[in-house]
Length: 461
Ligand code: UDP
Image (tube, rainbow, N blue to C red; front, side):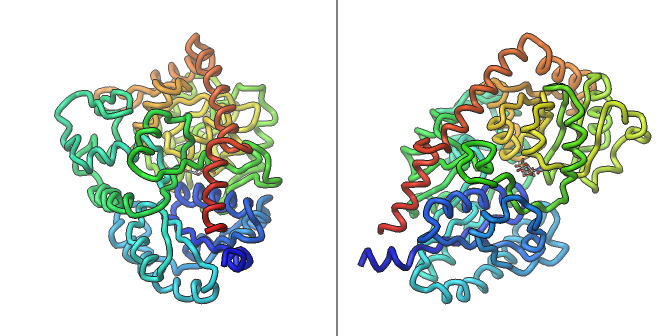
């Protein structure tokens, strides 16, 4: 029986929430899975049409993407495409599209389909998988600490509004209110998202695997706590192999970029700069900073007197102070999207001013780049807390009474990270975490072992 199964192999369906920060880790995990057993493991990643179509043919990792078959889902109507604002309607659309597609995909591979790996916020995917008699496993795209915090709120260990100025939770550092995920520290913000996260928790006791994009040592205590609750497997950091263990040749980028990177422009510009002299500034694919904040950052960069490379998405460009570009040609380069991994890995980059979303945070950690954290929403404040106080690989910029980070504060943080006494410790720690991240995914590392075990479980069961 086992032999027959081995011959037929295993088909894994991967369903990310279709935004950049969720596609990247789930696609990368897919590539790792496919690499473990090319003969027996096949992967299909479900992505909306406009995403599939932008697969970058010049991508050096297209070979690895081709081990991951991309299945098109119809795009949602335009009005639903706005950030996370209309999440209920968006999820509803996605559920209908996935349910509609599954019979076809499964029918084609009836004998080998085994398991669905779904973004943990797509909670309906477990029911859909069961309808088709498939096993399913949620994938949590944020840190294990955030997973634990949401669970404590769900269990009513903490309540909103938070009544205490500081919060102690099992296996986690003591948090001030502004270290908590924004859905908790700002009551009433995005209740639909919080509900969606909560809806996933009952599943955690019904599945055989839960994947989390972290690695054991990164969040040691809370990882042990989570393992005492659920069958969690940490499989991160989900960074293309050539930036870590280099075992998947040519796996140099994620492969599905929703924005067009100005890679060559960045590369040339960085090549002309001294080692560790450049401040890289980027706030990911979703954050929309206010004009005041953009102006303060612009002035802070100017004051720091450092070279800087700033990603300002097309839609945000109008918020830059007038004449900013003209006035800073000597010192700065503004692009609308970068190949972020390539930038972070460039020897000229010495500091990353980041919103601390989970992918950007783990990318900076994995590439050993010290951070200045300017968190905006969601899990970012909690990640910033870890960056500054737990891993000690950066500083969190302080907000003033208006909730703004002043240009003076930005200058101070950049100077401290790049030149100051504290900067020396930050650089040492950044180097340490870089090595530990690589070790986790390298042969025999904790994440590698978890991926191997999962694959063995599938192909031998
Ligand atoms: N990214 C990129 N170029 C940019 C900015 C971001 O390639 O100019 C990538 C980055 O490497 C990361 C992803 O986009 O993998 C953003 O995910 P993250 O979780 O950091 O932020 P989000 O967009 O979800 O807020």
